[in-house]
Amino acid sequence: MGLNRSCNIQVEPCEAGYEAKISFDAFSTIEEEYSRIITRATIDELELAIEDLKKSFPDHYMTVNQVSNFPMKSSSSIHLMLALLGVTILLFIAAFGYITFIDHSQAGDNDPWNKVAAFFNNVGAPIVALMSYLALLYTLHQQNKSHALSLEELALTRKELAASTLAQATQASTLQLQLEEAKATAKRERFDSTFYSLLEQHNSALDLLSTEDLRQGGRSLKEEFKTLHDNTIYCRYFRLLYQVLKFIAVEHSYEESLNLSIFEANVKNEEKFYSNIVRSMLPDHVLYWLAVNCYCPSGESDPYIFYKKLIIRYQFLEHLTLADGDFNQIYSRLLYGKNCLVLMAYQEGDFGENLHLQRIQESLLQLENTLKPSFRPRKILTDCGQEWIDIPNQNLITFRIIENMQEKHDDQILRLWENNLNNLVRDSEYANDVYMQKVVNTLSIADSIEIEEVKNGKAVINEKFERLS
Image 1 (cartoon, rainbow, N blue to C red):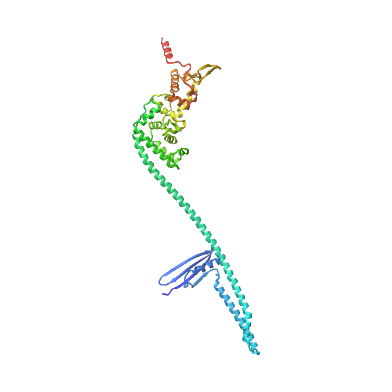
Image 2: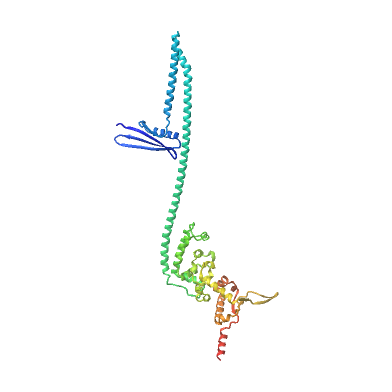
């Protein structure tokens, strides 16, 4: 089956230089078309690229129809022109020699053809050598030109490879970011799944504590701790709460397990978000028992020290009710001042921005400023004269009544304040170390307190009887 094939080339200028659209058509029982677009900076580069493309196809694609707005050089046509020029010169020399020596032969020369041959050899040989030399120079010029074009092509190839490498690096970086985001998303989803599963168990255990309050009053922290750990329901709940808080802390750090380095880092916003969810579910009496459970009498060596650091890190005691902020309640040992017993086991900063503690501190400062305390220690006689020493239960702080104070406060109220302060300083186990040293340092040196010029209850009753009589 015969095929009629042709190659069509159309050259036009473009922004990058010159553009050639090459199409190969074949007409047979079916119609098919193959086309290519080649872009180069110069017309010479474009010619070489077209030649290389044509050589890559079979010989029957040789009928070329060129449609171009620019004249295109052909190396084959140049070679043909040089060959025709050489043949013409040789023919001219042969004709010249023949005419010359034929005339001489008619004059009596017996060997004209030898002279023609010698003339042709003497004249033609240098001309042929010159033409060969020129052809060699042209060939070298074309090779240099081709080599230069090859170098340009190589430079373009290198640029394309560099651009491709950069694109691959950018793509790899993008894929790496996508991979990291996918890992972070998977980790967050895995954390959420585990966290809310633990939270569901936590809520179930907390429901069992909602109606059970072990607070009775009249006991020390050690006794409260023992009472707590004798209760299996509370123990189970606090173990579960510890696992929830530990899970939050470890998952939001770079550590594999809970250790001191976690507590040295700042709390992240996401970490705080999850811990606040847990903190918001604890009622006041559970917060109190949580503080008792973590009071850690052995300090840093206590087995519950990490538990204590966790509740301080997430500020669980910030919402603990402390005497409802009423100073008149903090001396009540019977009720331990509504959770104020735990003040002995924690620092002021452990309570965060606890509003109840702030109001208690303000009330103590106000009371101290109102009563104007003055220190009157017991003095003993020494070799150097009279000196005071810290004798247990004998150092007295006296509060003097300021001007017009009795007009604003009757004796009964002043006496109540005096009793409150005495209850604080006399019970060293409960209040002296707590309120006096951590809240108002001026009162910490006292063993007893009195308010001058305040009549006791017996004197007031006697005065009333005297008025009646």
